[in-house]
Length: 243
Ligand code: SAM
Image 1 (cartoon, helix red, strand yellow):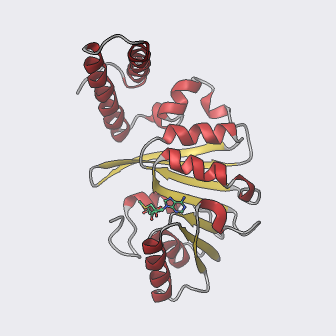
Image 2 (cartoon, rainbow, N blue to C red; image 1 turned 135 degrees about the vertical axis):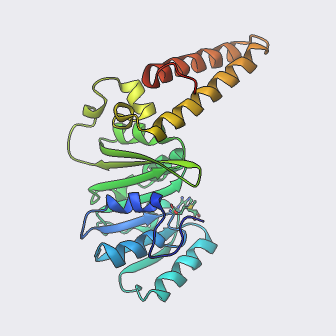
């Protein structure tokens, strides 16, 4: 699903791996086949990793892969929900990839007490990156870097955060737009970014048109207002083009 084999990561996971500092002690939460920690152990010289999984099937697949690679001494495969698989002070870097942004934010929120020793978070939401940006800001994590990429027709974002610094600094020019579009991605505006937000804008416009036919209840009016606001924000960021 996610990559061709354990040595050649998908572009998405390779982009996540790039931000793991050399020598990190890593927890990869929702590790599935444990491809990311296996790659890091073989290519980035990490001394220790946890592959955390909540579901039995992926957990067993991670166990088998780690064993087959002869990496059981480096990668500890653990079954559990979110950050509960981490013992205090065991890791300094956490990766969470391939889930929705709301789920990633809720995993971080539930496991907050495990973050004391963690200096870097590398988070790769499939959708809803804004939920993660809000969580990071509310919990004093500083967004350091962002990437957006397309692979196999899907668009992914990668958010990298550290604990030191000024969390509001990346959002100085516009907090609301920064949280939604990404304070680093929006000014850069690469082709993938434009494609994503043009698609989102069209979707909001389509829903808005449908709501024009609905009875004007307070909920419908509120939803229309919200959509209009998001459409305007998108136009401010990517312009008014429709192709
Ligand atoms: N991280 C891998 C990647 O990016 O290719 C796998 C992504 S896969 C789509 C999501 C994985 O997260 C699934 O194996 C799922 O069981 C696991 N997962 C979902 N919620 C979780 C949680 N609360 N704690 C641990 N694992 C979780």
